[in-house]
Image (cartoon, rainbow, N blue to C red; front, top):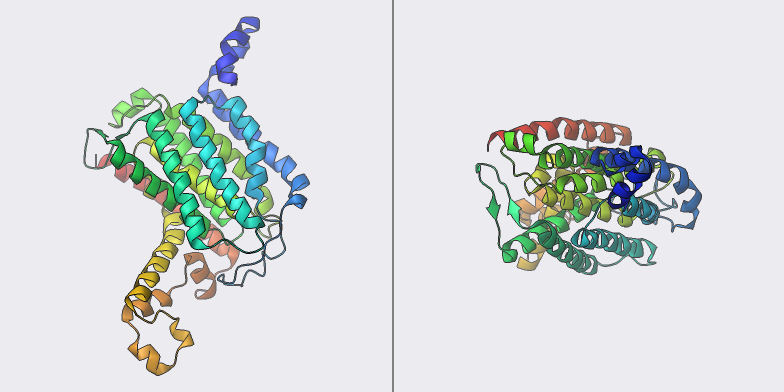
Length: 373
């Protein structure tokens, strides 16, 4: 909003013209988002539901049980006025933001439910939101994509772009949600992803000289998307101040689903779906492999194989079990649980090492992605 009224304000006082600067708005959104959540979240989390613990985690959820959860609901509501005020958006952009909030709201309802929602129900709701967001992105940004090995960009038909974009959004939502299990882990990794995407959208995609030098299609709207991403990143940083181990509040499905979808939206706004492997490599491996294991076990079960954990079977049953099933059960997923239980890493070690890995991999993979064009 402030971007559109800045020219009129500048007539009253010249320095107000800075309010039409994308750089100024990006910096203001990041700072205000962080300060708002840092200061107001502790006053409001008493109204949140409490965590019930997770049986599948390495500590059976004992450390998180009883803490306020669903903070993503409060964080997203607090940052919404900043988004409306600071981020210049068109009609289709507003539709995408609405989808982000629907993903948050469904996660919050799951957090509040006395009985956790089933996987099918959550999966279908995520898919519906992802399809809607992909449609809005197609209307607002078009379907031009740039890919490795090709210097020219491609314009995809809607029947290819929308399902493909929806699949990407669905996967990032659920991979990020699966990575949520160690204090600060999913938030810290996502924060790195968001800052990387904000820099890419503003300094490369949205800046013609750099985009032309790197043979990347220039999109003036990239700077606007960078402001949205940076504002949400600032809010996430404010939340992480209180989520550092030992955490006082948890984001819950409300936060992890919104953040995961936001990463996917920013990747699609940048125009290259392969960027998801660049900006979120550790999140995808940590949470995405868990989804892969779940799907594979379901497939083997449908075929008729015994998919029970070998530790629960007799030696005779273990010998008859398929070797692939044994391999799947030999590693705990998400991988942060395997690191804690099987490799005996502390939560602090998991957080630091995963963050270091992503901090190293993101710039390396970006250079590779750009140079092979």
